[in-house]
Length: 220
Image (cartoon, rainbow, N blue to C red; front, top):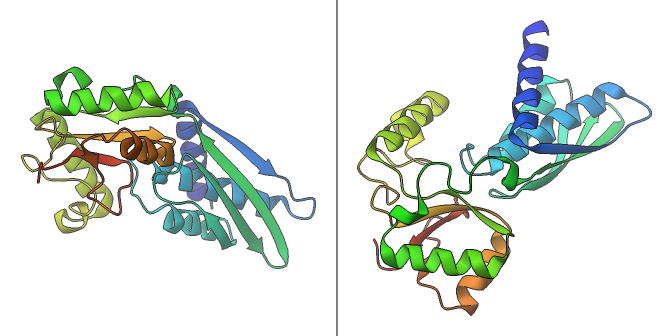
């Protein structure tokens, strides 16, 4: 339990530093259930956004279980910046909600420059961001080969094998980010999708398990 507590504490600190605020509905009957709910919500929101594993429900269940609770519900679609969980410890139910503010994570383009995107991609993304008026943010644009190597190595370590990592990160040399033909977005992804259609932008989302990933149409 000491190692578990330390791990959860480290997770909470890391997420708070990254710009996540937590709103929990305190349980008057069992603080342990609330602690489990808080940890599950934090883990889920950290894994739902770009850079996470894309498996927020599984991570929420894991952290609930590690705290002696059972995950009852996780409203945590991949790519969401807000999640809500419900856990149970015996007959006690606790709820928590975690929210990530993408604007507090760092520069709009963490892994590369929008200016280095393919000119057609850059024009489409710029139009989208202007129309979104701050509700949509770029978290990853153009990436150098070195940056893609680093992301790939991290993914292999996190998921345990190159085969598993390939489901979430392209190997160096195979990423459309390296060609300036892809961006990862955060914020209101439903708005982003709607604006792409309304403005007839040449962008699409070819990866069903990564709703934040947009590419230039015709790139593949």
